[in-house]
Length: 224
View 1 (cartoon, one colour):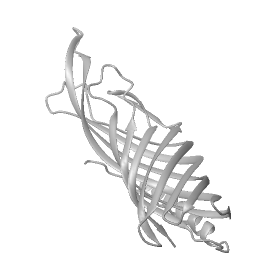
View 2: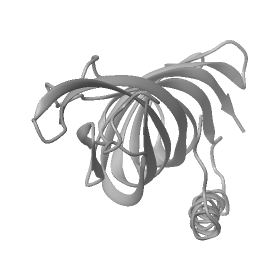
View 3: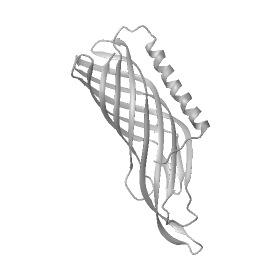
View 4: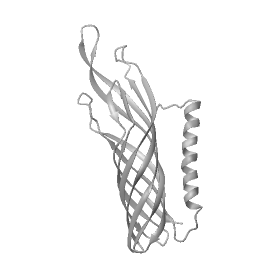
């Protein structure tokens, strides 16, 4: 993985993470009438490959995440706020057909695609808790996203195909659904799915890619 951040980008990332932590602290600072629910999870994000000239299926990106949910009312059915963040560092190899040279010949180029992604979200949720050990919930809201993408052609590629690096911010919306199965009073398992749409996209030698799609994840759930 060859992803490097300069000083300005590190400062930006620190500000984003601090904003996330402050938001969580604001949620926790309210008088707690009921337990908060948190999740730590691992999953996959499927980013569509919309370029027919680019080899391979959709991008299968690994993600790590954490979130917290605070209820504000209800018993069996509960409602409240949620916030959290997703992180991803991933590497993939892709091939594509491209024209090369003055004669316009077509060559097959293989590239290493490296990506770094941070997704912060804040929304509302509705939970259904028919038993102490079972919890179903859905949520939706806005998100902020930052990503960096690098493409590095193989050593045998023609000279006009150079390494490229680009980063950017975007905004969007998400909707998700999840299930928690508690094995003890405060600890259990979690699984879910989320879909997001964002304004962030990249365009380089491999074509255009929109940073959005389905996410599937599993992990642990806990009350605190």
